[in-house]
Length: 247
Image 1 (cartoon, rainbow, N blue to C red):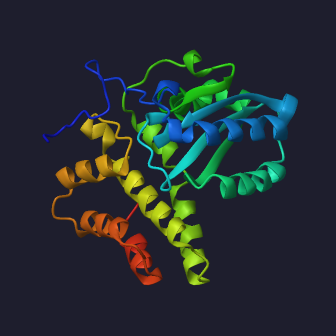
Image 2 (tube, rainbow, N blue to C red; image 1 turned 90 degrees about the horizontal axis):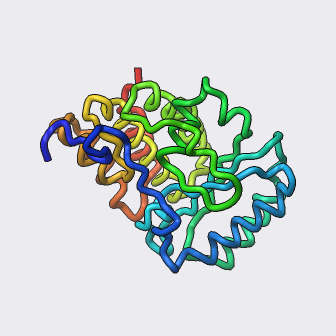
């Protein structure tokens, strides 16, 4: 692999949206349908549209290992308590997914031009509409952009701080540990993706590109090693989180 890799972009340099309803594997169709119904029941007339992203949307999900990731647009602020409770019951019936994540946002915020590098990029390039009016086409196609990377990374520091607090109190599951390692790898990659003229969609792709730019950096190997472990110790994760300088 040569630098820049231009992975995930087309010949003109635009980011390729790799999600599609056509990519949904049969193993995940039922749980997706039921999750959509839960959202519709929970939010009723406040619901505008639902979008699928992540490995299920890309058709690369693995039964019993992958999450179901949904972005939900609503007209007004909503209470998701009932949805979360119903989702826990749904997960007990459908072990083919290990978690269901809902990214909930207001329609007016998503469509605000000031948020085009966050919501606009997210909906246009990382999601596919599975229910309601698809507003993703209201946004232009984009190339790798520092403003997009910064928007996607804006919650990274707070997520790391939350993880460190959970580790201190011994309240972090192995699943949560793997999740934060993946998020850190993704976040690190987003600091160089514009230089690389790429937009990787998987943690494996992010690691491969990081190796090109940080060949001698032990943090790349460390992250890769942690993801291969069946159990990540608290100290291992703390060392990893403290070893990356985000300034």
